[in-house]
Length: 113
Image (cartoon, rainbow, N blue to C red):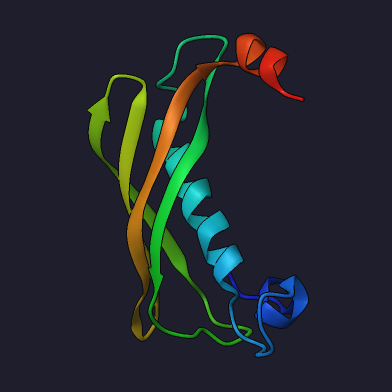
């Protein structure tokens, strides 16, 4: 994606600098994990986020292009552990792990308050 004003720490109220915000980096990584399992789950199933462990290592200015990658590292029952990274033209922007859980959509929604 190309970093826009709406993706900055200022816009997302997570800081006071006009660079790619950490919450947007997390969202981008979660998008990558969802894409990684797209088409691989049974009908009626999806994954939901459970744990995010991420180091945001370098700033990316508005107009910069970033790419997120997710690789399924481990399957522990219904838990899927991904290694994720985000890079821009200068190199690594963020790296970490995201754990998602496979759920039955209808059953999961019945638990929502």
